[in-house]
Length: 322
Image (cartoon, rainbow, N blue to C red):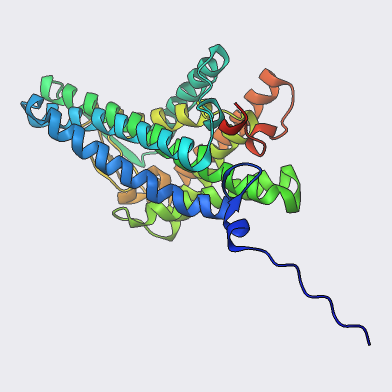
């Protein structure tokens, strides 16, 4: 009998490293990304906070300084990950920053504002939410301003990490086995699940809130997958959080920031209002998320003429080609 052929030898280096792309393979990029992102954010954030600490003369100003420092630290961390782990251009992260990008960002900001305003209006009209005017003063306005800076941090950092990097890496890794559309759908599912689980450690979180935040991740990821840009999800993420916490005084993913333009109290059942976690854990929030996904799809269909996943999500312009 003829001898069985020995299986071809695959070196550990080929398993870990893609010679053609000159970067780690997708699974190992996904392992390296959060480590590098967090490490650089902490180091740069601590350094800048130490250097600028003397400028913070009050607690409100201190919060604003820390938020602005976090923007810089998170942005630098994302650039380090993009350059040295993923080997991507800035534009390939979904930050094209051209006129079309600005228009999409404006749409995202307007949509996030409209969705959370709809939650507020429906909740008040149905008697599920009680409103009391908040006394406005310099202190409160500074607090709301610091919240805006903070939510800009959150919107940029989370969209860069979860949609710009995680969703894209998963989609790139899956495209060889399942084709581009199924690969993007897989990236959308994985990044959304990570988004939901990451919020499970927030105060007052539970199964309902985690499921709802996962659905929110699908909505945000849809804006990226259909356009190849982070403009729409970044805009929605920033305005949704800010209007929710800084304008209407709802808890934001379980966090009560204690300063807003309007003070509200949830009086309806938790399954509707989300209770202490905020609207995102209730049917009001879920309804807004579903409506947001429909609005994103309609906007992209009208503006771009089709609803296909953008090919740049699975086939990036890598730095090594430059």
